[in-house]
Image 1 (cartoon, rainbow, N blue to C red):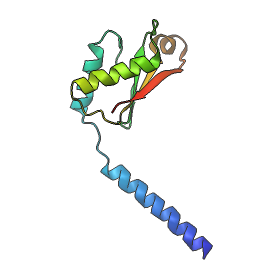
Image 2: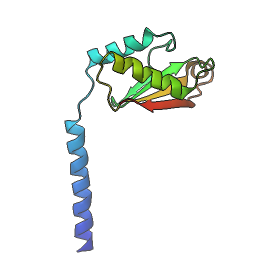
Image 3: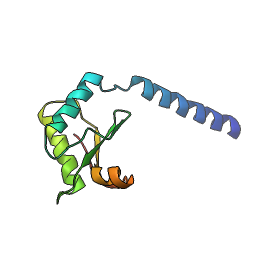
Image 4: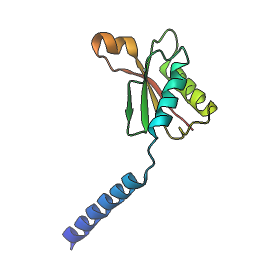
Length: 115
């Protein structure tokens, strides 16, 4: 009996996961390009986004000249929401682009979730 209940719970969790993955809305490619261009227009973000992850995380590279990663991530959110782009729930992660280029050091400087 316990075995049957465990199997049913596993099957239910798989079904819920598949349903959520099928119904989530992805950011269209043209909107991604607009998001990237909006960020590139600001001198704080000198490089194209490092990577997108499942349209839930956007990693950005900065040159941290006296600015914290959290402040930079919040500024990115402000820029995007100011242009009324659909970024609600998007997590912005900030990395040092110079360290990535020189030593492949992906140390997270800071992050913020756009509201």
